[in-house]
Image 1: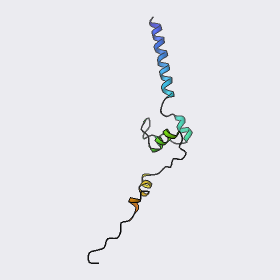
Image 2 (image 1 turned 180 degrees about the vertical axis):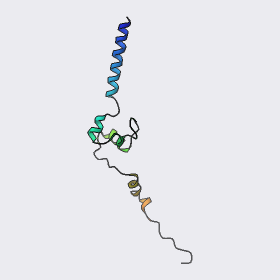
Image 3 (image 1 turned 90 degrees about the horizontal axis):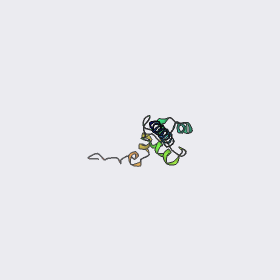
Image 4 (image 1 turned 30 degrees about the horizontal axis):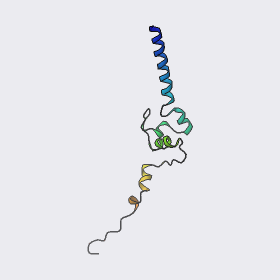
Amino acid sequence: MSEVRLLILTMALLVAITLSQQFSFSKPADAKKTGKSCLFCHTKYGSKELTKAGKYYKEKGTLDGFEEKSEKAELFSNPELTTRPSRIKKAGS
């Protein structure tokens, strides 16, 4: 009887491992498919936390159309931050 239980437990463990690999969030094949490092989409190795690129890839299934912008470029694309204030008149001018 204990051999049967051990066999059932082993089979259940193998099924669980197989299913967990099939439903994982990302795979090394994704990095190979996109030609990008894992850190392009993830904040750190082994993390499920995604960058903007990772969120885009999760939603679309591709990086086609994703525009990589640096934080500096995003700051300069904001018109409120790039417009110059009007000249201030000095007192007595």
